[in-house]
Length: 442
Image (cartoon, rainbow, N blue to C red; front, side):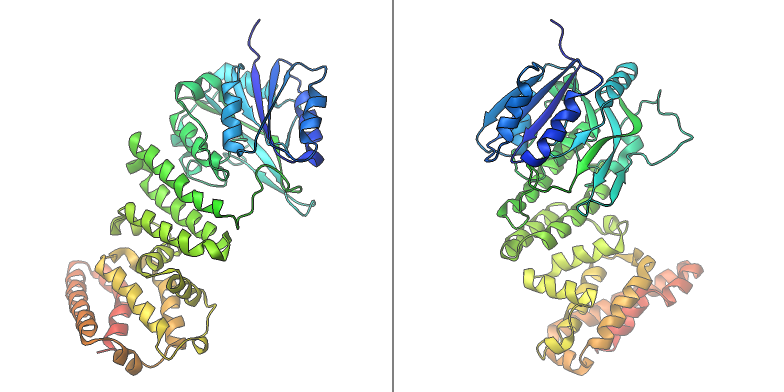
């Protein structure tokens, strides 16, 4: 007996209200030579009964039940049972177009693809709007029917949480098994590492510019929906460690260092905002440890966006989460000095920020002059007097500031002699503003 052409993997957890639509979308595929592997992950509703009902009279359905272990574990169990030539992952509250398997299978065969990318649509909770997810953008003039490529063509999609999902890809089974690509057993974010590994290891990738997948956010009671307030959100630190380890072991880290740094900053900040307050302190300490482990140079930081640069600086110079939050809130304009103690905290953090910048020689920050000027003006408007500030600092700290001013003046003179154009820029640059600002403290 020949193997089925496609194995569809569906982990299921408490999704009875949406499960029937999901299963009907696979049952009615125009390509009938498929197997449908459903792992019931300890559902407490009628999900398992619905699965059994669908399997009656349709031998393509393979139903398994286990204690609740999470989506990553469920998908790994399903992968061990795969006999199809290709694999498609589907969440139990989503659905696919009826020609999904047929179209993707034919393209994968014709182009000898390890991986086929395709488009999806996100149905938003208001039940009125949709968010289109185009992998390579809409380009009606480009013919993808005969195009094969590797990750270099879609490099900006590799370390990208928006595209870091498994359900918008069609995988060759042998590619997964030969590269030993598995899901981590985290209950959250388990598909991110799988996505990164498969995108980078695939030798032949193709793209089918059609929406096949419907990602449903209207019903939230599913396997993927765990409260962000749960301490499980801390596992994102482990996810990032796993991705970093993979990049290093497979010689991708240097090539993707900049993308990885920005991806790390963006996702760590997002999770820090989402996680429940009781876990923020623990999570912040993990963030600091991870950022330190990256050994980020001034050269690296000069290339990232200003927004994430501020996040990094505040993370590094903060002694604890409370101080970090105060700096972030001050920067965003969310805190008034009227709410602070007599000590000029905003001035203190401004100096700490700039000392960090200066000591690490971030010369390219002249490119961020407008943003930093706003930053400086905000503190200037809301700060206490320089006299109170200077009284707050020790003589050693004042001496250190003066040394930094002297060094910068020397560097400034050198640069102006070397480059007349740079001289004109520096006169209006943030470095000049820093010198003037700190000079006023002497």
